[in-house]
Amino acid sequence: MEIGQSPSVGPTSVAPPTQTTSKISSDFETFLRMLTVQMQNQDPLNPVDSSDYAVQLATFSGVEQAVRTNDLLTALTAQMNSSGLAEMAAWVGKEARAVAPAYFDGTPITLSPNPALIADRAEVVVRDRSGAEVQRFDVPVSAEPVEWAGVGPGGYPFSNGMYSFEVISSSNGEVIMQDAVEVYSTVTEVRAQGGQTMLILRGGAAVASSQVSALRDPAA
Image 1 (cartoon, rainbow, N blue to C red):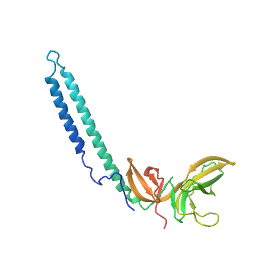
Image 2: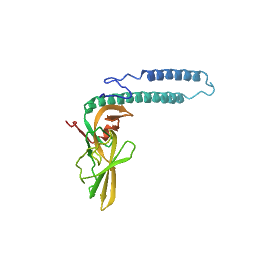
Image 3: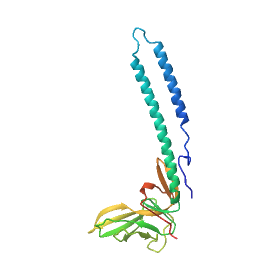
Image 4: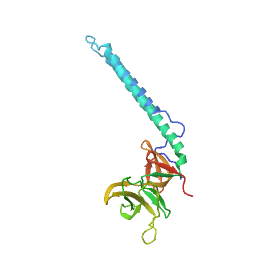
């Protein structure tokens, strides 16, 4: 198990954006040279008003400051993401509850179906990696977690692999809600990706840390 980061960012410091700063400085010098040539070659009978020069200088200065501000914000964001990864290092090895496919290897998987409160019947549908239904069973109409043993009607366990779960709530024989089921899966990696912190779960499923509703120690 490891804690990864994409793209790679140093844990305690962020390199200053020297390349962008150098480019700004170069562009500003070019702008001043162009402005000087403009002043030297203007029509002496119809010179450019000094206020126009001031507007040009102010406009370029504003753009320069905006670019510098963006660079600073980018550096701060990268540093915050790096700090977030360090703080979430303790999540590796824990079991996180979220809506995501779970890896089955013969060990029961804890499900949190959470059917509709007004339902009089609830059943969980199990699907394999391809999306095909492999099992369907009734569960209590409550928010209590249930264990899926991964055993078929003949008493034989299902093959190892990824499985997803859906709860169907019914009332008076009519379906009133279908919803994905949250499951507990072991966190194997924490990764910065697309501006957010992602958890890689056992089996390779990825879920945003903000989508995790519970965290617990693995069963002994």
